[in-house]
Length: 472
Image 1 (cartoon, rainbow, N blue to C red):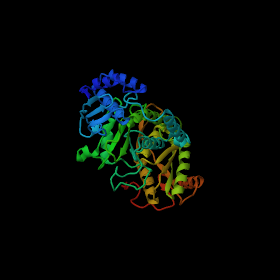
Image 2: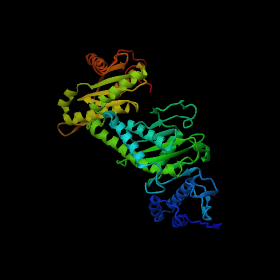
Image 3: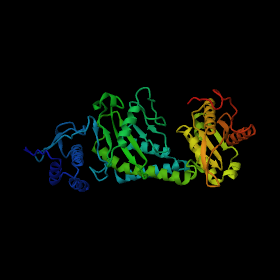
Image 4: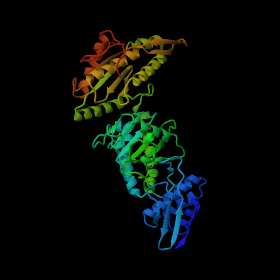
């Protein structure tokens, strides 16, 4: 056999190209890669192409582990009597690789154009099925996680973001071995709004630091230092998604119990999918800004709230879960406008909305329903006691709020405002939208008649009195 041993990645790739090992769709990618000035990209690309040639049996393995993304290989063409040596990659740390996600980098994806179009059409159809779905980033994220699981053939996908308007972490698919035994849920395929476990959040933040379209690939959890392993076994690919507003970023995580799972073909799929995922999240964010948000207070508007209210009611009815509706009204707001002016009134609305939002859970929904009236959905699963505690905490927090507003004379003044709150609980106070809304509105009128600055509901508030320290 005639041996051709090459220690240069570019030299090996060029030799494979000259010998005609690449199909026509790949030749352009290989030539583009050879023009790269970045040696690390050339090295990664050479590894991907050689491993792909092994999988399609254009070359045979002589030495090394083709599943390990960093290990050197010796491969052969038995028919032509050629032997090629692929040098090992130098990893910055054990068990971690940073493959680029440039769509023109590496082999082409192994799914057809029709498959990709079918996926994108399905995701778009789901996202546009209602106002709530189209403008709800959480729904868009769940669709992305499901697509990630399907097209990378992994059981679990995670989402992490520190600054997007969605819960800090979402999980889709079976929890074990991703979360460990205590966090597992047999057969679970729902999305969890709970924050990611500390180990995953650490790697997600690490992925956010990566630039130039690179992914963070944890090749084998067993190779990581014990204190840095997010799970006992497996591998994960973390994708940094940068939306149009560059101040906002997210990380998608594909997780599998198999080590060295994300080979060249799966990485090629990720390169195609990542661009679409970014567009899908951009689309949801823009719709939120244009049709779902109140421009003054930057919280949800009435149209979005009504759609979400109907969907929450339907889901709670199917699952036999409790949730609460709160109607929050700023006391004496019209007189306040007349005294200080409408600019001051706008500032009060903004500050009250911001304060209400900060006092709610990530899964709850707050909207400006009209004028000085706000509507809140305390999402299931929820007890009456917990709903009353949250409602009273909101009232007490607003009571302590100091708002600095402009006056009609061009000066500024610090003012205090209060709110009255009427509450209804499903199914205790009503089984449909109108019954719940009418009940909460009646409770609001009773709160106003009782002297304002109070919460009224048909169940007993347990715990300390108004203004005291309330449990989380």
